Amino acid sequence: MVSIVLKPGRERSLLRHHPWLFSGAIGSIEGAPRPGETVEILTSERDFLGLGAYSPHSQISVRVWTFQKDEPVDPSFFRAQMDKAIQSRAVYCTSKGSSACRLINAESDGLPGLVVDKYGEFLVCQFLSAGSECWKDEIIHQLQQILSPAGIYERSDVDVRLKEGLEPRTGSLWGKSPPDLLLIAYSGESVHVFRGKASTCSEDIRPRVPKESVRARRSVATLELPIFQSPYCLSSLNAIFSWNLL
Image (cartoon, rainbow, N blue to C red):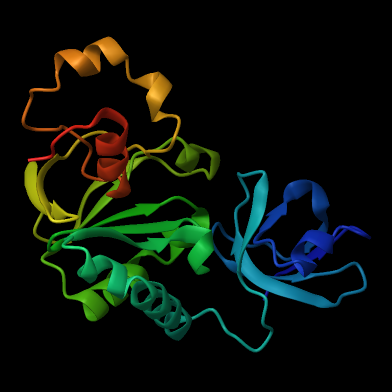
């Protein structure tokens, strides 16, 4: 296995289990790793720190898969991590009258660069790092085995992939493609979700939506959002603008 040896004193963030290793912390690379290849990270004294996915094009040179030396990064690893992430959200996804939720949220679930959302019987994925791209086929296979969706769709059309040396991609990965207009349930409401440009939703949505435009369109019955939009945005918009989601 290729070894990434750090400069002296640059291991502190990894000892705190931060999952990113920046290029400036690297002292030497022993070998010629391919993009996404699993590498071991060592201190300048050659003590083990973790196993991660190498990215030669990004300032984040390695995204850590595991900090355990005896935990190989193989299909069983991905199955265990994905099972844990999905099970941790099982109650949330089924107890609130919702057919849409986030199942896997990248680094927070120990799967850097991988985001998976559920929209009804479809899964929508983003592969945002060289590591997740390298393991894409295995990830798709495991999603089929765990969840048996009608289809798996990719919305990796985001700029961060360019920083990883990857081209943006969108399209069906397995099974049926989701329709342009998909009906989902969220918090007991029925909502039509349009397949559009991938984006995220956060608290800063307020200043980016003109209030005058919102007032003028409050009577519109259908809210147009990207198919990859996080479901919690629906509640956020309703709370902010007092819309009735039909």
